Length: 378
Image (cartoon, rainbow, N blue to C red; front, side):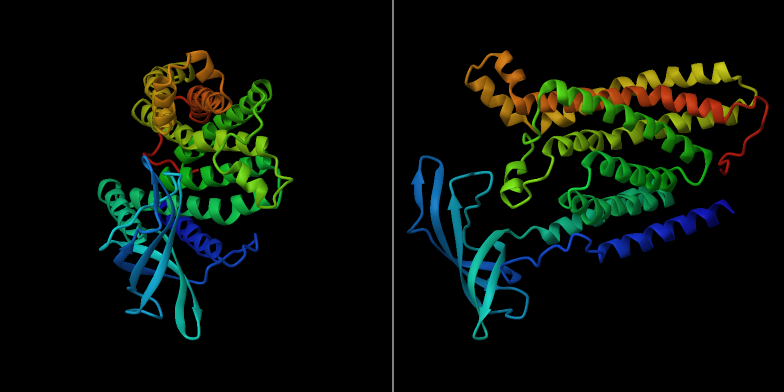
């Protein structure tokens, strides 16, 4: 019965993923630039490139042989515009494969533009290897985790982001999306069991705490929300009414929701195992044992958040140190304060989810002496 319910649940998630993939609620405009194909660089002309120390600007002209698409085998002239921003620009050499964007005029490919080294095939290979690793280690649970991963990515791209562009409330929309994803992930990995229900309940309580603290401290920190990359560009693209501060708040509790689920699942599994092995354990003893386990897990999880967020801003910290700027300037800068809020508020959610999950578990398994099956169904 249990396997049948989980199979039906997985099939439903798979069908929803397929339907969402073809959904276009945002009426996203057709991508500009025409056709895209892989191209092999056969010749490079750097005569127009201007070099100032390590910065390159102006245009690099490439001769590219198309490797796929309707004009496979044809040669096209491609322009690579260098803006002088190293985080955006790529400087090409002969023999490399790139993504080419071009128009068609009089039956020929023209107006070619370089869109970066071709990485899509490697990304697909990496995704497949990751899925195989999940299945090899976790078996059916790994397959369900991979399905949940795909579903989460599609929901964010096809549902959450377009709804924000339609000016839906970022906070309430974010809570709704997190609630949906948490439910799918918890019941996929934990099964349609008490364990899955406990993980979901504990996770959502932790997310609510994180959301409330993010709203409070964002106001107290006087952060305007444009501290995120591309936020200002989004406004210049015509979305002047977007509430960037609320989008920033939503990003805080969405970013920590994965760690919250992880910790909640660990504790729920522990509480489930304790009750299975010691069915006569009392409510207080059950909670005490769960809290003892959670202390060790919480200690490492908060450090994980610190390293995850700090690791993505290594160069920023390095430039402050290289310039000899005092720590006060660093910590008080808006974009650094935003990351501090992200780390600490997210850590609040991770820490509080532990007692929440323990409490919910103890209340659900509150009947001492009741013998539970290894995978008790809801």
